[in-house]
Picture 1 (cartoon, rainbow, N blue to C red):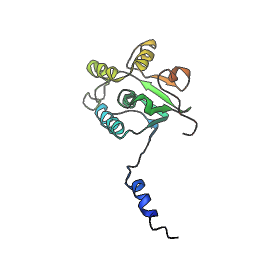
Picture 2: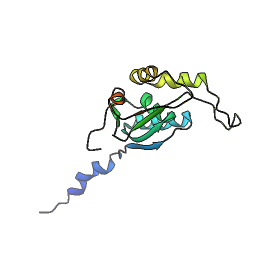
Picture 3: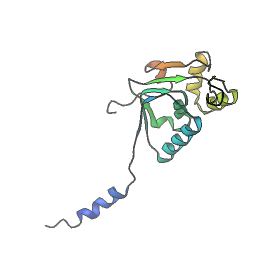
Picture 4: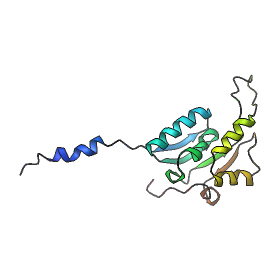
Length: 147
């Protein structure tokens, strides 16, 4: 028996777009506009985000752009939140907070994230961190064990 049709059966598998998860392990943040663009691409591709380490500052915008059912945290996850500030290269190395940027940032967060921030004194210039555990799971689901 010849299996000449086997390559034809595999064509749909080859033509399907590859899915790639974003695994965040050590992200200390950066420019908000870059994170918005990155997370919008992930959302459009319907990819998952696995927070498997540090996700601070602009990295946390993932919660307002990627659907929450596409995000999970591993036992190594930690999140850090602070007020938005202007690029220090434009302010001679001085951290100058941006009220408009902070308001924009808060506008992205879903209510459970806002609730945690508010319970912990709101956004301030200092980083407020949360490690994986019950408090974090109120904001985002833990990853299934196979991750």
